[in-house]
Image (tube, rainbow, N blue to C red; front, side, top):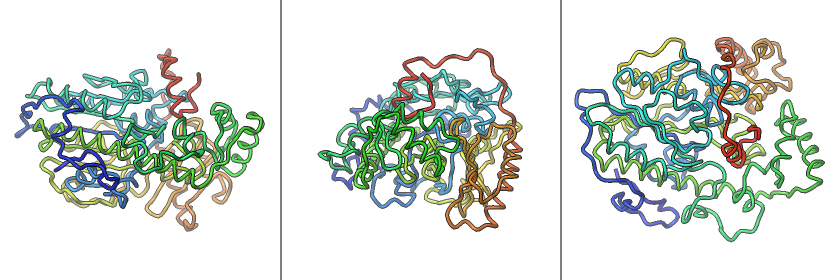
Length: 503
């Protein structure tokens, strides 16, 4: 499997990974002894990475040669959806196989109750070494997601795989070779702001462009709302916070009014060309991420551990790129934000190249890993193992998948293979929500459905949504005094578009 430095479609040199010594991968190490024992597990989380940018998911633009090469040796799940559209709650669900409402309070600080076992904690009971190397930001240890890991290190604030990958490989070089390991590696390579170092930043865009899109990619694309760029980000977000349903027709009108009055008319129209420019810069970040992931996978190969390991590549959520009037992952939970890649390479590439069509949630990853290693899953988890699909067995997938918005997003949404149904106005943590969803008019302002979704399917989905809401455990009680987010982290989160983080 050959890794590349960059996408050949934009004229970059394609070279073997042996040329990547400049990224500090470290010296070759002897492979861990895995014959007859539990396999090593490597889980890569590509933050804010849309599935539709990967060639293996149908993208024709050649943005991801490394991921496409990986996909040929992996089982590719075509219809995977995240349970949250922000980093902390999505990863919290990934590691506990529980939905966000069951562990995230109104302040968005994940609180995983003691009776909710974490994946690294469970693997540790089966003699796994557990280590995580993350890009900080919403995975800062103060969020509590470090619990259960033997080693949990932040590369840098909103760091890339360029930063976390070498740290993970260095850990591999010193880890005991007689024990299996679970290695989690995370990077914000495609997170806002999208502009990445040369040659990637403008690899798909005109660097000389003088437009509002150029302003946005150098600051925060979240400043663009409904065809207007608002320089005062805080004023814009305050207008969002005043709306019960900020992305409804009435909410959009009120947001524009409030923003205009607060900003004294300072706003800049954004053209379709500007929007296309921003998307092209995001594609440059995709190429950057693909190269950094390829570099890390090459580091595993050079150490002789890649072929024997289970390697999982996924994203915690996607990104809106103006399709519904906004950029980022702050305000809704449409397919652009929730459809994520999931590719699993089994040892020696078993079953590689197969595509699985059944619906899958990220909460399903934990029970799948536990089944593969022969571990007993804990009670009351929400996930369902898809291990049978990895071995070529029958796999129907879920009938529906579910995503929750944050407390300020006030959205509960579900998807079937035929479309999406969302309820806007309250978050899933509200105890009366199941009754309200059950009683609301299906054609009323609370529901938003995929265009053309048949009435009978909308009604069936509403019934399923009510049933799902009633299965959720109530939000955990306040845990007492919680660690405050450091002021520097609050500032950084807001600079990266996390508008509901209070300073």
